[in-house]
Amino acid sequence: MSPHGYEEVEHTADLALHVWGEEFYSLLDHSAQGMYHLLGITMNHTFPAEWTFKIEEGPKECMLVDFLSEVLYLCVDKKCIFNEFIFSKFDGNLQINATGFRMESMKRMIKAVTFHNLEFKETEFGLETTIVFDV
Image 1 (cartoon, helix red, strand yellow):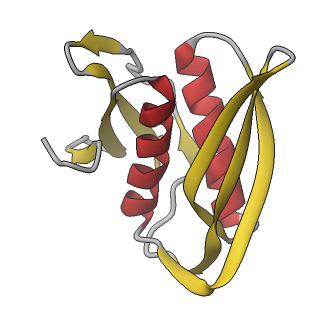
Image 2 (spheres, rainbow, N blue to C red):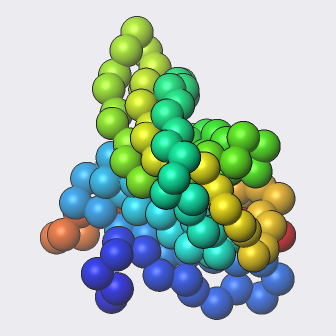
Image 3 (tube, rainbow, N blue to C red):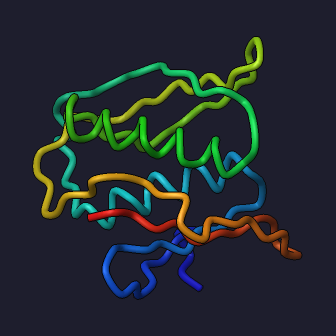
C-alpha cells in the first residue's frame, strides 16, 4: 500500500480510489488528497485559502460522499485546494475548517462522487473503502 493513505485502482469506465485511515476523519482527509491527485491538481502556494463548511452527521457512506462532493465543488467552482482539514462535531453536523491554497491548474475533471459499491471495512489498521468517481 501507498504511504499516502490512498491509491488509484482500476475501474472500467470511471475513476476509483482505494482509501484508508486510522480513523474516519483521517480517511476523509486522505480521500480529499487522493481526489486531488486524480484531478492532477497543482496548487498556487502564493495565495492561501480558507473555507468552513458543514455536512450532516449520518451513515459514514453519506458523510464521505457529502464531504468529497463539497470539496470537489470548492475545487472546481472556487478554485480552492485544501491540505488541512479540522473536523468538529456541532449540533448534529460535522463542521470542517479547511485551509490550503488557490488552484493553479487541473489536468482532468470529475463530475461526481458516487455511492457505487461504497462500503467501509474495519481492519486492524483502521478503516478502508473504495470510492468511485463519475468522469
